[in-house]
Amino acid sequence: MIKRVVDFFGDGKYAKQRHRLFYLMLALIVVADLLVSREHAEYLWDRLPGWSAIYGFGSCILLIFVSKFLGHRGGLMRREDYYD
Image 1 (cartoon, rainbow, N blue to C red):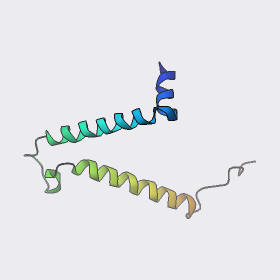
Image 2 (image 1 turned 45 degrees about the vertical axis):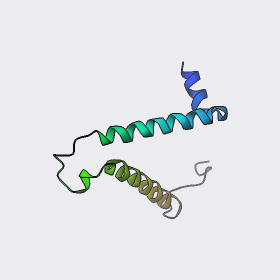
Image 3 (image 1 turned 180 degrees about the vertical axis):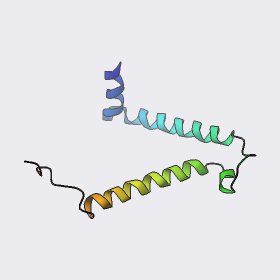
Image 4 (image 1 turned 30 degrees about the vertical axis):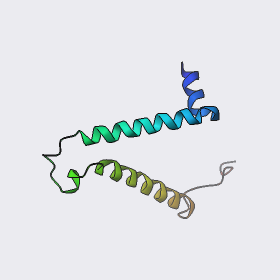
């Protein structure tokens, strides 16, 4: 069972099926977000459909760029053979 899952996500011949699956999941998440009641939202941006997804995606991208900057420019990353 695990071999089939690893092959599905790791093999290039299943790329088209993976893309279809991911787009289907994205559509389901957008539809689910539209069905959520927003009458008890505390802030204005909480009432916007898709705000949580946009905020989460932006935060993820920011985290990646900050960590790359700290690793490469900030001197936190070491050579591969640093401990040899």
